[in-house]
Image 1 (cartoon, rainbow, N blue to C red):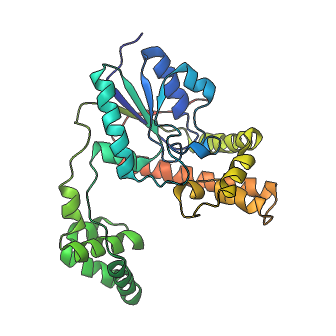
Image 2 (image 1 turned 135 degrees about the vertical axis):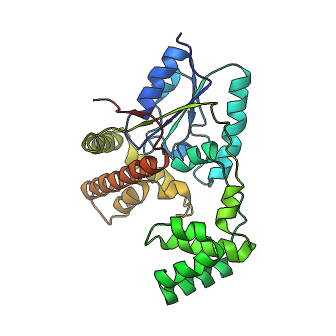
Image 3 (image 1 turned 45 degrees about the vertical axis):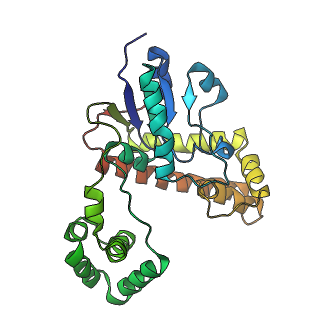
Length: 294
């Protein structure tokens, strides 16, 4: 077997070929593949989340796939609490690991840290939102700059949600959001891992997305969503908001045809892939790129 580093991070958008690359690397090195995708955590979403198949799981050991019930809500913090001891365990055993997924916040938590910011009370958040709506962005941003100039300068124009959160954190905790973030430490020591982003050309990525959705329908995605709906779960749960679930739920309720649902999933998937591409280009600029597969 080829010698592998202790830990390799493999990030990238949906349908880019991350899982295929990881599987080929695992077969060469004996590495364990560890999930870093928020949708592939859920046992109820094997098809719609494009989780590794049973056959793929037989070719290499996979961990943290399908470990959560759709009735649960896994946050970034919960995932880090699950993955950190697992990576420590594999390291103690001398086993290399490949951390694979498309959830950028998971990689950020590991490589930059996860700020332990207290929850903002609803009444404070609502009051800050009301101020934003009354004053408009320009005046609100100046107000934020008085308590958190770093956030006011860094948050992109039009990002109402982040502006409101920054001021709400400052008001509810008495400390700026930037100060909270500055105190965070990465969960992985610098130099303890290799990293890469699988980033195919956009036209090839979109074609792969479309092909994957067709395959999902053939593999039983409609029945997967039908089983989810039968549980009468809270629609606000992460699993119920996964790409493909609302679209197929609309079809199953008679609101749309299957063709319309598939078209909607394709559009949602392309938008999701585009957001992931943008995120990784902005947040992991120094990571090497892999072009995926032709």
